[in-house]
Length: 115
Figure (cartoon, rainbow, N blue to C red):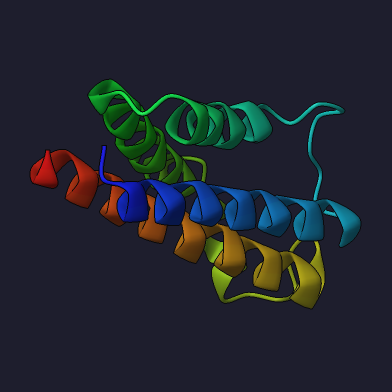
């Protein structure tokens, strides 16, 4: 796996996780152990510690799953409506998470193509 793309993917997934923490601190309702942590951190760990080709595919699939889940769950409205759960902090956290997930997905695809 391309080292630069792997580093960008890992870093972006960690930033996305920080976005989730911002949402939790802002009062957005999450389970006690949010599944999104596993969806973001497991691929980040695989990409960082194991440089196999399939790890980039795992990160890309996780990113597509998260972006699709944003719209399927109806939470996309929180991107623009600060009157919803979490207020401004929840909206900012969701923006940070989603932008970072899109960056991670893009860099994972680049890593797959460069292989």
